[in-house]
Length: 306
Image (tube, rainbow, N blue to C red; front, top):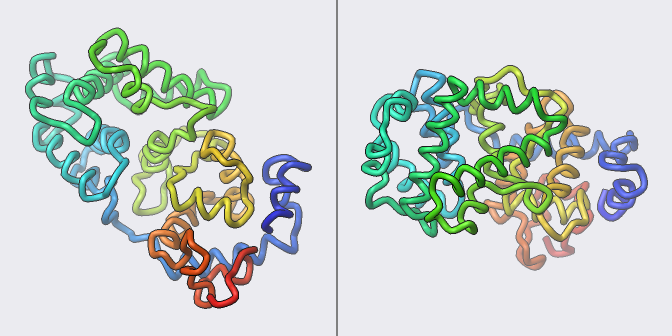
């Protein structure tokens, strides 16, 4: 695919290269081999989603997944410590605890908490935001269902979610610097909204280990969580030529993944990410192990010595 894929994306629109029946089978074959090399576990490990598995009630799972997605940045062990510390304070029924909590309860729960540059006051804002959504709509599922119904596109929904969160912080937690509110609630087109995509993936995708709790998500709205490894490999393979990992970047990658596996566009993202995590494919060409890489027959940039 490589540079020709970029040209086709430009000439034909996102996913236009998928019309080439000579390329799709080769990419599917390579990605299936990659998926066998890095199989997705049936239950999450080294993944913030694992916290949701501690609960049986769907509303608890949803609330915990939503909270964990906001904190899903940085080193995985640090994420675990931050989420663990928070859940210890919410008890065995997090959704009920939030609904029944007073502002003083929320303040008490976040006292002394901090994760990287996210202070306790910002966590208070997140808990208050979730409590407000659940109190007004009855559940996070009902809130997102309403947003889907009023949004013309996935981009509209992501923008509405981010702007609503920022407004809530301005009104209810004005002491949180706007830059931190913008980080917690990114919006298109500047952002690919990775953490929101992660949450939506967890609650809508039905294949394990994802939770598959919601059945109302529009099938065409493919929301890909773009992490650093998927971003690097998407550029390497010519799936996009964008320098910024922004909303259009996400849309281009989503269109290609949809063409490769229409019934489950997120089938391959775990394996692609772990190709980077394993350093089998390295950012430095001289360190790539191309000779044993499952993608070597389709990758446009194999090293001679790999």
